[in-house]
Amino acid sequence: MNTEDRHFEQQQTQATALRALDAAANRASEGLRVAEDYTRFVLDDWYLTGNLKQLRHDLQQIVSQIPQTELHACRQTTTDVGTEIKTTTEYQRADWDDLVSANLKRAEQALRTLEEFSKIIGTYQPASFESLRYRVYTLHKLLTTTQQSQSRLKDAKLYVLLDGRDSGESFHALATELIEAQVDVIQLRDKKLSDKQLLSHAKLLRKLTSNTSTLFIMNDRPDIAALSDADGVHLGQDELSVKEARAIIGPKKLIGISTHSLEQVKQAITDGANYLGTGPTFASQTKNFKEFPGLKFIEQANQLSTLPMFAIGGINLENLPQVLKTGASRIAVSHAVIEAKQPKLAVQELKNKLANIERD
Image (cartoon, rainbow, N blue to C red; front, side):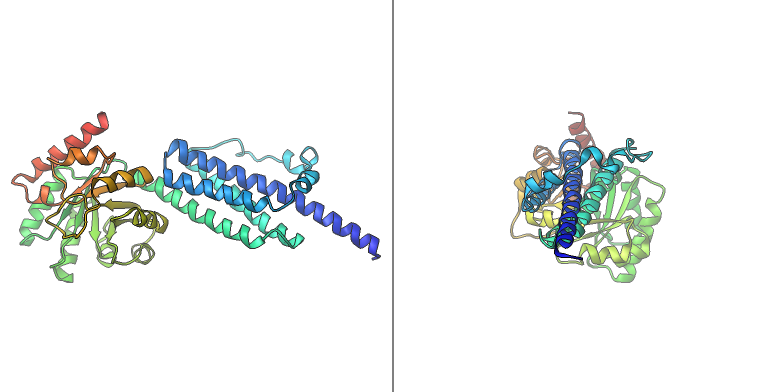
């Protein structure tokens, strides 16, 4: 091949690659925009919307390094065979989940094309496109987790932390009373019981909550949660990570995280938590804290994300209106219910206030 032919072939290769890069950049940006509009207008989720917007901005920054005049010069929309090829489902979306998934997959695939075709040209940072693709994978997971968690915890407003009580009989009696009162979630939390006792209590609570509307969550111990077939596990900041807990309890169980700052909220969302405990709101008889993030934190956390969040820490019937004014619609309590003279009545009073907020 002579020099002239070689030059012609190189020019043709570059033009073809630029054409593919142009189309893929448009597809990726369009897919991200649809997902962003979903998190903005449907979920009303500030955190996810912000992340998707930043992704789209970063994509444009990388693509802008390619001379736009060259991209446009190689664009051939009117003669592109791809514009004429259609699939039977291309103009159908079953629901919001289908819409979001289709567009994020579109962005992921387009970013792969950007990465590979930029290698042909030898410039324009293929590694940057690869990095963006991994970020889209992560956001796809977070968005799916938020959607699924909202669905599974849609009606969960009142979450009660229950200890092992002073005997197996009293534990059985109180757990039964709470379930009959239709507490939405019961967490078994007791640091004094032996592992054998804790597992026995967990299995009993699983038996009692089976075939009811009450979810059973195990505190701190994904191993006990797995052995008792709990609906999930709740982790503190010093316990196992979401990744480690997920390896033990599997993909279908709920994982909650206690959070005390906005940075911890963001990290828990990124790690893949299904719900958050946010607090402590007030002084509590269950745990001792040197500092209380308080009502302001509850308000900021609920504005940040639509992942289900339960305000926790010293909440009772008297101070509940203050909590609800922050925008919180879910609470976790312990002493206000389990130490009440009439636990079932205490549950109903709290649930009535939560229900009134929804009607308002």
